[in-house]
Length: 467
Image 1 (cartoon, rainbow, N blue to C red):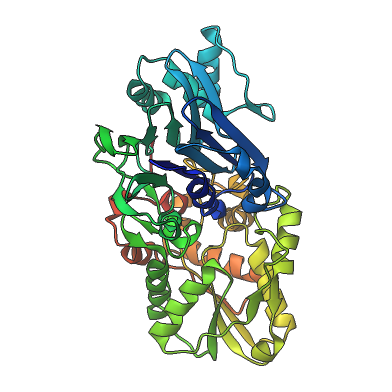
Image 2 (cartoon, rainbow, N blue to C red; image 1 turned 120 degrees about the vertical axis):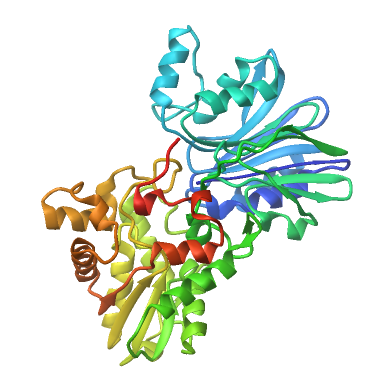
């Protein structure tokens, strides 16, 4: 998904920018970058994060950075920030999101005899495409409106100019953007977690399509938020850091509510509850508290030398890293019946390994409880995973096994209580080799988040949503 951070201050901003950007690291997978303006020139650095951490890569370069304003990004797509020279002046830009109609936009640009210099592999850079759409207009504000007009998908962005920082949240608010404040400085971030340890407090949550222009002295609303919002529900279930807030709703407490809902809909006797680290843990605690059952760590996570499991681009390597990071505790597992909570089941490969290891360590029963419904529809709006194929999803694999094709009777398979739904769950459970498998109900997930259903994107579970 990726994350943004920007700050502007009456003092040097480099330390704030460095740590604030780093706090977004869990949101992205491939590249990190920072750009700073010192009143005369822009200084930029970009590094590959696939085999190391943001701090390790950027710390040696910090002495080169000086300035009172800067932007940073953790990207799961192309290298950023880009430095742009245009009739609007020189500026740096970072983006988060996904352009679905990139082919049409590229053809439109080439038909007008425009060109692209920044590419990611053989593809045009999303960030350069956004910059090109901005540069078609006479002001930054009009340019961002032009992005909203032409782009299908999602885009939140920060633009660093010689006067201040333009910030814009995606037109439908699929990704968050929050303004923080402290004396003499402002910050903008995808994560409220970025604020606390660098002294910022939340000033406002930008609304869908809202545009702000921010200086060290204050901020101006350039575009009011739109009425319609489709924020990604997975921010609370999986993507979000436990201490973060989106729409003023805390991630960790939402996960407790998810786990409690799973518990209320469950029956049967077990000895304890456990969670797949990290994002499954809070769901398991919520389950444990609701059922008055002990929470125990059947796995512990070893992190000192292992990057995150979804960071390598190769799926086999991701699975190996995930396995090596989770160390089972046999004394807790042997002979026991347990509920195993996780945030979701995407492909199912890692969870299958988790169940297998528990069984090999002597678990009597393993009852798997994902905190969200079955994923049936691939994400159309964000970079939710490295793959766009619906057949990568455990739900679709089960449907293909049952129907001979992966797109048959999707409405029935997405509706709990139908015969086809039960057959799909049974098929997935057999693949996982767990004792039982029971998914979260969508209505319970929505209640746990606490926003009206129409304000949330639930496309990956029910196929709804539009551009």
